[in-house]
Image 1: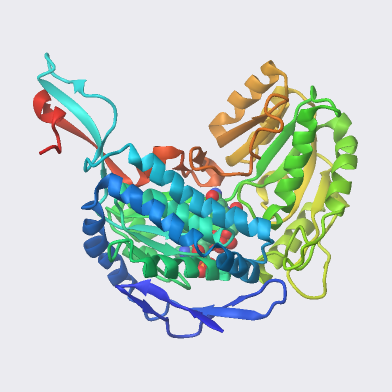
Image 2: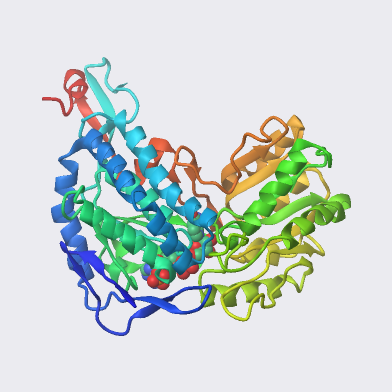
Length: 511
Ligand code: NAP
C-alpha cells in the first residue's frame, strides 16, 4: 500500500498514528494511506511565510507566470500515469479523469498567459491616479500588493488535480507561497502531482508545501496576512469561517461551497429546436459526468408544468442507456462514486428527495455487488415548492424535474430559493423573458449561463469552470470568488491607497 507523505519544512515526511485509508471505489480494495499526525503545522505555515514567500516575490510577476507554464508542462508530461491514478482512486472514466487533469494543467497555462501582461512591477495598479488635493500635485494611487503570509488551500475530494492547481495558479502568480491540502478520499492524484512539482525543482524552496491526511489544527495557526481558501461542503465552510484564529486575525477567507444549481427551460423553446437539444444534452451531461460529483452540476431542472412529461420522456431513455460500471472498460460511461461515505450520503439523499418526488429512473438501490455505484437518477417533484429540493444537495448523479408556470417571475423566485448558487442555466430565445430572469437571479449567483439557438453547438456546458470566468457564488455557495482572469489574484493581495506627490506616485516602485 502506498503511504502518502507530506512535503513540509523542505522534506517529505510521513505522519505517525493511525492513517486514513484510501480505496479503489470500483473494487473497494485499499490503495493508499495518509496521516498528518506528528507534523507541526504551526511551523509549516511559518516556513512558507518566512522561506517561500520572500523568494517567490523576489521573482516578479512575469517570471512567476513563466513558472506556471513550466509547472503545467511538468504535470502534463505525466498525463497517462495521473489518469490511471485518478481511475484507481476516484473511479473516474478516462473522460472524467481528463476533465480534472486537463482542467488543472489548462488553468496553470491560462494564468501563465494572464500573468504575462503584469510585467515586473512588485505591485499592480488598480485604476488610474486620482486627484485628491486642489491640484493633481497631491494624488492617490490604489495598488494591489501581494500579502506576505501563506495561502492555505483546503480542497474537496471531487477534483483532486484541478482544485489544487487552480488555487495554486492564482496564489503563486500573486506572490504567495501555498500549502495544499487535498480531500483525503482521493488524495492520490494530488499527492502524485505534488511529487512531480517538488521533483521539478521549478519553484523556490518553501513556495509549495503539501499536506496529506487530516487538516487537524492547521487553521488555528493562521494569521492576519494569511489566506484560507476552502472548497468543500457548506458545513465545513461554516466551521472554518468561525475558527477563533480566523475571527481574531480577520484572516482572509474564500469559501467555495455547495450549490443547488438550477437549469430553467423557458416556455418558448420548442421540442424540435436546437436550444431544446442543448438543454437535454447539458442536463444529461451534468448528471453523468464525474458521476454527478461536480459542484456546478445541475440539481434542479425547472420545466413548464405542461411539459414535464415530455421532458421526462426525452431524458429518461438517455439516462437509462448510460453504462455504469468499471471505468477500466471502454463501454463504461459512468464510474462509481468516490467513496463509501459518498455512496451512503447519495443513497440517503435520494431517499429523502423521494418523499416529495417520483423516481423516473435510477434510485437509491445497488447497481453492482461491489463498488460504490449508483444509477443515473432523475426524479419528478410533486411540487416545486417543497423545501428539500432547494436545500438538500445530493452530491451524485441525481437531478429533479420541477414544474413551474413558465413565467419569468416564477422562474426567478424558484431559482433563488436555492439561497445562492455557483451557476444557473437558462434556455430561451425570448429576450424579454431572458432579461427578466438573468437580472432577477444574478444577485444570487456567481455565474448565469444563457443557452439559445445562437449558442447551440458553440457554448461550453454550464458545468464547465473556465479560468477566464468567475467561479464562486453568494450565500449557500460560500460567498467566494475565484478565477475570472486576473480577478482570481485578488484574494492574495492587499489593496492599499498610496497618497502623495503625483510625480512620486507615477514612478512608484521604479528604480
Ligand atoms: P468536505 O467534507 O467539507 O471537505 C472538504 C475539505 O475540507 C477536505 O480537504 C477535508 O479534509 C477538509 N476538512 C474537513 N473538515 C475540516 C476541518 N474541520 N478543518 C479543516 N479542514 C477540514 O467536502 P467534500 O466532501 O470533500 O467535498 C464535497 C463538497 O464540496 C460538495 O458539497 C460540493 O458541492 C463541494 N464542492 C464545492 C466546489 C466549489 O467550487 N464551490 C467544488 C467542489 C466541491 P478531509 O478530506 O481530510 O476530511
